[in-house]
Length: 120
Image 1 (cartoon, rainbow, N blue to C red):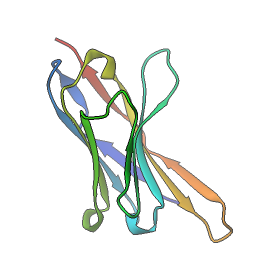
Image 2 (cartoon, rainbow, N blue to C red):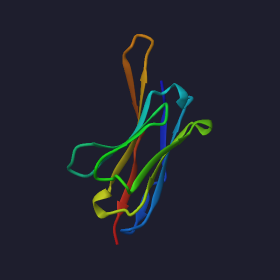
Image 3 (spheres, rainbow, N blue to C red):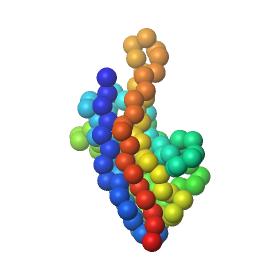
Image 4 (cartoon, rainbow, N blue to C red):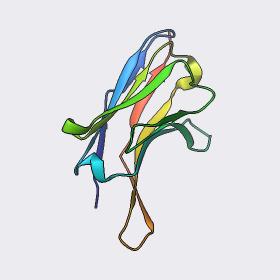
């Protein structure tokens, strides 16, 4: 079982920045893929950014050039630096972890979410 705890959400003006953190209860060396998703009211949850155990990253087109995902293996923490925020970035942001089991299946874990509101 992996527990994920997000922090860093809040209210920010358009054009501002926030950094989200996701702390894992186990070494993130053992997690194959970590990512951030978001869900706005009335919309489906969507992928924002991912980072592999090897450090390769991927981003949704809507956040490319504005958001950066990174990790600190020593702290078992993944970050999402969000710059040039727009009102349409308003959503609950969730941390996600996918870990391959010894049977070859993929276990998936979610954090509780943190609210990001971009508004003047």
